[in-house]
Length: 325
Ligand code: PBG
Image (cartoon, rainbow, N blue to C red):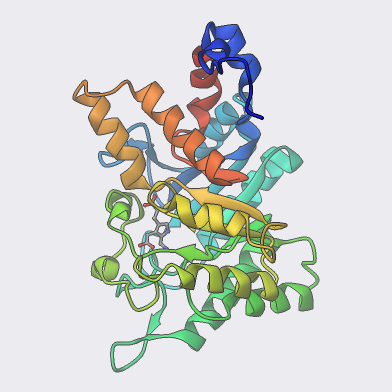
């Protein structure tokens, strides 16, 4: 028998307090990760034109903003290192990491991007052979080398964003061999070849290969690949999986979170530079309220199944979210 009472869905929406009572999708600052760009030989912090509110940091300004974020309950940060010269040297990374782990100890979880693209003259995320192809195995070896340097210097969560095959297994084995049993890996397991990375270019300063990453990033017309690489990276030892970009790939987030062999994994999604800056630009043109559009976009990522969200506005979330309630 059908319900005899007339169904009212509006009853639960009648006031702010009642709406809050019925809200079942909860997002907390602890579930957000704030990315930062840290530059070698930078005299003082400079705002980035392409991502509103974000900076090129030096160590000093980075420490200050990490502390500011920590006061807003953001305790996980994702660092991108931009070297002064395009060579595969990681002394700067190590120096920054040592200093941060000394300053923050266990108060902050340090995730570090280990991709080679900001270091390489070709702008690719891997090493290029004589024929101009991105070579998988030598790239993986270089990623392993960088991972060990980061782990040694204090990175808690190594984050390979390159999309080379079998890198997770190679990194995990090397970490274990060198007794870094506690170092974790956040795999960019579902990284699509996307136009939404555009504004990131100014921040990370890759050379010209930036626009041509289709030989290693996932084609968005082939979503099954994202499931396959999530399964593979899980088998190879990834501690956290990721979908990137997030907003244009909610179906992928949902599928991974509901997959019988993947649902146990912690799943992050990355609201990338273009997705974030798009909202900023609409707000600058008075087309939307940034606060409202931003919160809506984050809750969509959460609802789809993200356990963690990487977003450029993480440090502002607590305040915005409280104002909304
Ligand atoms: C590079 C990398 C990219 C981003 C993070 N790491 C760009 C790319 O792979 O093409 C994009 C992040 C963003 O747009 O916010 N390994």
